[in-house]
Structures are given as C-alpha cells and as structure tokens.
Length: 450
Picture 1: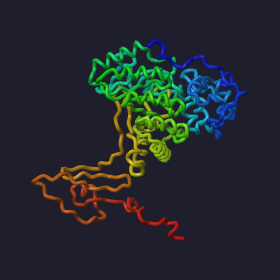
Picture 2 (picture 1 turned 180 degrees about the vertical axis):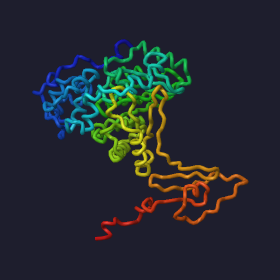
Picture 3 (picture 1 turned 45 degrees about the vertical axis):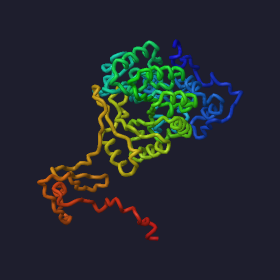
Picture 4 (picture 1 turned 90 degrees about the vertical axis):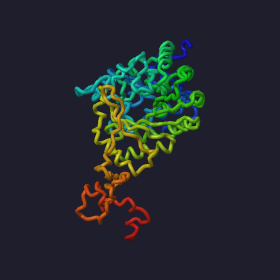
C-alpha cells in the first residue's frame, strides 16, 4: 500500500474565512447557539461543518486564527511563547464549546496555550515514562509482557496542553509508514506472548479510513494477537470523524476496543453522544481515560457528573490518571491526595461500573499502579477491620481454623477501639452521623416540619 498511510494535508488556509463560501449557506447541522464566538455560530451553518476533514483542515493553528475567531481574546506574551514552543491546534467544533476566554473555562484551559507551560520544576521530564527506552523497533513501545503500544501518527485533531507525549505530538504531523508497519508486524510475529496491541499516537483516527484499515489488517495478520485497542480523542474534539463507514471498518477486525478521553461534563455534547453511539452500536466496547487536571475536574462533584454522563453514553470509565510528570504541565498537576479524596467520595455514591481506577503511571517506565483510599484499617490472624466511605468500621472474620476458638461478641461500648474489632470482640463501630440506611423510608426533614 503506497501512499494510503498519510496524514491530513498541512497546506491549511490562514483563516477559516479563506476556506468558506459564505454565499452558499447550508442547513444548520450544529447551531452552536451558545457559542462564545458569533463567527463560529455563522460557520456552523455551512455544509462542511460536519465534514471531519474540513474540521481538520480548518483547525486553529496560530494566533492569527485565534484572533479571527475570538477578536476579544487578549493574548499575553506567555500565550504567544507557549504556542511557539508547543504546537497549537483546535478544531472549530471544539472551539465552539468555549464559553469564557479565560482560565476558568475548562475547555479554554485544556486547549489554549499558556505561559505556565514554559516553567518547569527540576523533576519534570520530556519523556518521564521512558517510552524511548522501551521501544525495541521504531514506533512500538513494549513495556508489559503481553501487550504493546503502536504509535500510528503524531497528529491530533486538538493538541491537549497536558499531553504526555508533548515532546513529539504535533511537532511534525506525520504517520507511520508501510515499512514501519511491516517491522512492527515482524516484531509481533516473533513475540507470540503479545496478545494485545494498542494503536495510539497522536490520534490514529485522524488518519484516512483506508490507512486505519491497513494498520488493523496488518495487526490482524498476526495469529497470536487477540485484542486490538484504539486510543482516540476524536469523539471529544472531532466527533464527526466517527462515521458509519469508519464504524463498519473497525467492526471488521473484532475484537476491537476503543479508549477515549473525556475530561469534563462540558464535553458530553449531543455530537459526542452520537459518535459514541455509533461505536457502541457497532459492537465496540468504549472505555474512557480521564486525566485529573487542576482547575478542570479536580472536584468530586464535577467528576461525579462526568462519570454519570459517560455511563449514560455507554462509555465505561476505565482510568482516572494522575497527570504525568511531563515538562510543560506543572500547572495542571494536583496532589495525589486530591485523587484519593475524589475516589473516596465516589465510592458508594456511584455504581461500580461508573467508578474508574485511579492510577499513577510511574516515572522511569515503572508502569501503572492503582492508588486507593485505605479501606483496611487493621488486621489480625482472626479478623480484618474494614472501613467504608461513611466512616463505619466493621470486623470481618477470617476463615476458622480447627484450633481457633470463636470470639465472643461483646456489647458495643463508648470506649470500643479498633483493637476490639480486630480481635472480633465487636462487629462494628459506626459514627452516629454515618448511618448508610438513614435515607431509606424517611421523609425529607424539611417536609416533615411543614
């Protein structure tokens, strides 16, 4: 396959106006009625609005393009400097989700360059996960025994300001060549222990459909590969890319899984819902990998709203990632304690299918490790003391042995200690204000007093 594996054209117009014929208005496919920019409202009425290739060609790539869409934007020197160091790209669709031109808007914060990207504490690295070290052949990262990651492209529809591959993504928009795919397939064939291949980037779904199919069919030619996963943010930043044609192609190479990347409830638009529905209806399981970002989603309530919305869309929350130690992202990082606090809040409030695993991708290529609230309070040979999110502590008996004498439970006293639970003398300690059953069968106190 010669030139099929290519990236979208880089010969992009200076501004969106250059590429539109506004004398021929089309139907309103996305009215963007609440869009901050009147120009985006106007552009959303043109026939090309839902054409994903048009969206790619007309990404906002520089300060001039930003000013043409947001005339009131007052770029500080930091924005200019950051956009010169790290690539800038925002699809018109994603730009239409911005409601305020400042850091308080989560969409603005995730896609707009900031001078803070140029300040780095000494522990941040260009490649903190040491992916280059784990690359036996170009473009293939082999860190875990049974799976590899294939970098298919360095291009994305939108360049996240917190990207873990900020060192390469978008610096030069290119896609994997057929010769590299061949080398990757040879490597997979020599390592039958590899059962799972993650196709990532960049964003592989920004590639032409025939290029995507070439990659999938090449991987499927290796009998030992069982699962193909695709990492993509197009349902979030370019939902029009999820076409019926693309879904049909992906379906041909089952089992195929898709992991996407919603970070905030504002991203759960009707267009995103439709894109995910096309994938789900094609039998493709969808997982979501959220990154915990300061000033975006680092409150329990926002995270709860996001996770509930994802499950309604048939998207399974998979990971909540602690922000990686990447150069240029310090202003996005939260303390680990914030993620633990959020996870503790979610447990018991959401169904298990809506709760992701909070993980840290360890520096030095250590891989992902889960970080959890400590629900085990104490242990003894006979009992383990467990705690729930409401503060109740329960004595959980371990299996009996032949020589073990069952503990005699004693009445709960005010001086009861964790030690009494661990010995099995009492079965629980429960704060008066933490009755998990209190909400059942009781009227709202406000109404009772009326």
